[in-house]
Length: 98
Image (cartoon, rainbow, N blue to C red; front, side, top):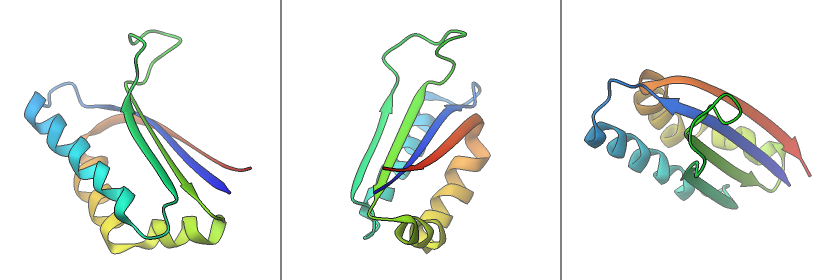
């Protein structure tokens, strides 16, 4: 199994409606056929030095090859380039095999 994890914060100047639209768009990534498991949730902890990110995305794949298919999928590229990148102020990514 391969797990792709992204912790991120949306830009402060976005309205609540804009934030909802972006999160809703990102939720559609779970429809990509190679995704075996998907979770996108708001962190329950208040933001602090030890919990600096508001959002957590986890996507599971059968293997590294499926992760690469996901990366190149036209829908993924559209969501990431059109909604995620322009509206996120910071993020970290981790990919592991388990």
